[in-house]
Image (tube, rainbow, N blue to C red; front, top):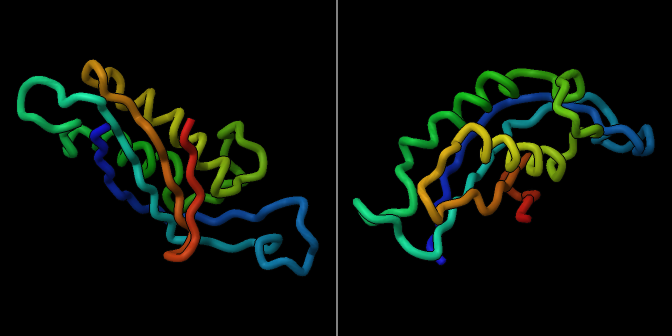
Length: 126
């Protein structure tokens, strides 16, 4: 399996419900998120011999800028409930499949990773 990964960034705030009041994530706070988009292919598509052109991932960048950057995630109608990194990764996975369609035959979005800090990462991989 061949894979490519591209990193993107956005800044946003959130507040997580269901935690004790003294928990740091229960308070309003923000992150400089890093999102890693991974695409894969069992075989390289004909032509230039790469999984996908990194430049063709621009619609995903535009999605992050338009929908998430400098927003309060709790206020957005994303349909994910409590805006955890895990749920955000799953939502971004589904959105990537939409904004990048159609992908070349045999190429698919394989994972999305969301980093809230350099030391923490949540991943959605179906």
